[in-house]
Image 1: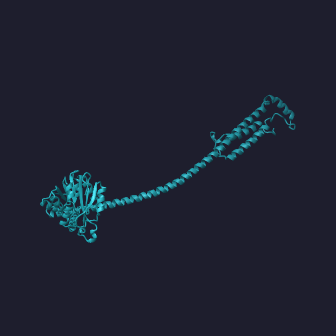
Image 2: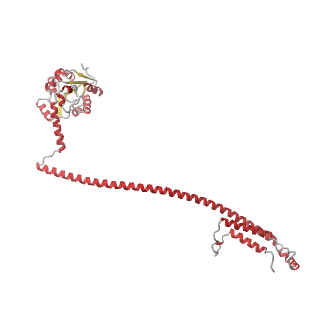
Image 3: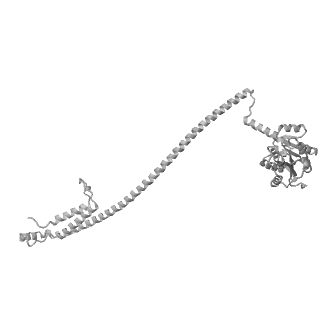
Length: 407
């Protein structure tokens, strides 16, 4: 006989199935086919449907305990109901407890669903941030790739240039080696041709020839012997007063000043770098060293000289050499010793003084030479007046400290 009301047990079973479908994954059961993926909206709709079924189950939890008035065979059913009362008396509480338990289970499922939805949201946010970071890295990586490509091009260019330079250097080295080999061959051949005599390099030959030429031209500009002797006599008293120690005459040349010092009975020696002039002076009885005048003076012991003289030197050497001369003389002289330097008067250039035919000569004003001596530590420096017979020249005398003042 058909019943117009659904069975409480059947209704509860259906509710349990609906809630279980939300709380469990059917695909996790052994042998169950994989369940199709549900969207969050579908899951929420199914939970709402399960809630409606729970409401229905609650209101029908007492089904079967009452017999409607219009039911057929109502007396028979009431008799049967009375006989089953001991069995069904606990059915309603059981049904309601079952619905309440399922309701709590649905609450748990809804909470899980909410948390899953929130987790999905956080995952989406994290995924977006990761995607943004990847995009940024992609852009930066592209920039780095461009820079690396540009750097690689520069390195390749430098490598190519270096290779070309190495090739060029190797070629030049080979050419230089070949040239040196040819030069050696020529020198050996020439040496054999002249009987093994040593060969002087061409550049050295030119330098020697030029030096000889300069000496010949300089000789034209040297004052006559009588003029030079007149200059020496004009300062002979000063030199004699200081000459308790030997006198050193620099660039003695023909020996005009040496002649005057010897006439005065002074112990005088000369120095010159031209061997033929040294030989000539020695033949005349003078003591003369062959050396560079300034270098020889610098090698003399400190305080070993009474006077240093030079007739033609101050205005034919570079300024640096002149400074070295002034410093070396100050060290080599004893206290009160004198330095006597003659030079062509620059005013003689306008009058055509023959001294300016010397290509080495440069204008050196007397005031410049005097100031130079004072600047380099000499106690006194003064211009000495000369007789007109001494020509268009001047003489500066400088004295170290410790002697009588210059008159």
